[in-house]
Amino acid sequence: MYSKESLQLLLKRLKESSGKKKDVDDLLESDQEIIDQIVEEDLVDDALELLYNLDVDGDWEVIKARLDEKSPKRFEIQSVLKYAAIFIGLIALGAAVVHFNKNQTKAMQADIDGDFVSLDTGNGIKIIDEKVEHSIKLPSGNTVLHSGDTLIYDAGSEGESPIYNELHIPNGLMFTLVLSDGTRVNLNSGTRIKFPVMFPEKGNREVFIHGEAYFDVTKDNERPFIVNSGDVRVSVLGTEFNFSSYDSQNEVATVLVEGSVRLNPNSNLNESTLLVPGDKGAWSRSKGEMEVEQVNTSLYTGWKNGEVVFRNTSFPELLETLERVYDVDIKNANDNIINQTFNARFNRNVERIEDVLNGLQVIAPFEYTIQQKDKAKDKEIIIK
Image (cartoon, rainbow, N blue to C red; front, side):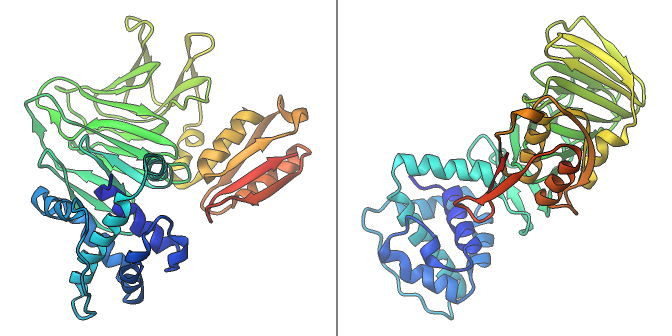
């Protein structure tokens, strides 16, 4: 079954293929004429923009009605009718998607989740293209402004139970989210966050996170801000702190930059730990206890500027971080360095993955090979 998001993905594939129709899989031969027309007239970006702006249910229902026809009517496109060509092109793309089988549809969904920033509104998934600026109309009626690598939600609050959205950041990318209360959240690679479209007028402002984020929380004495993970609950009024809770890591770490926060392990919410600026509160999953120490906060917040820092990091954990930061697959076939720890500092905006590996070779003896996978940007690295 087709969807608006499926059409977006097909157009993005067409755009990333440099206009080579042979690189766009699963399109019907009968639709290639329209695909050619869109490419030849350089309408791919316009088609994406048009599709992004089709947020009114009535408009999309018209398109879906046409796509539901068993024998979609062929149209003649005149180059002077630019946007008519785009619209008809989308119809043709939709006709191709109708013929996807269930396995292909699941594979497409995996591509959406894996390659692009995506927003789950509870009524479908929207692809966030950093190169396109536009407003997103949510099912709730609220409007979200998308500009570059930032989503900004309408200011305000609501009295009823909150409606939640979920933002997914894939490996290799970073993103910024501005919540309805003005709280700014920088999101690291491989992170997802669930949050209300608008916070309730009374009670807590709660979000749920998996991964890593830097929170600059808008102060509100009447409505504490709560960050929830599977292991730890962080409570604040207005402050700045870094929070990391990747599944692959043993500790769930909160590093306080400004203000104060209270940590409660979910295993015992009556147990409370108060942090002061410069403190790192780390919940050990293996020990089941909280440990607090004073740290250099820049080592834990520098990722916002592209820094990748390793301090007494095991080799397996280091490789998992590199996979997440550079969006690559790494397989380790060298057992001699599994138990070695590393101290190193890189910048993802400056150094390529090859530069990082070459730097690590100075610390530990190993060799590596890089193989290109099916997708142009995907790499598989073998550590020997």
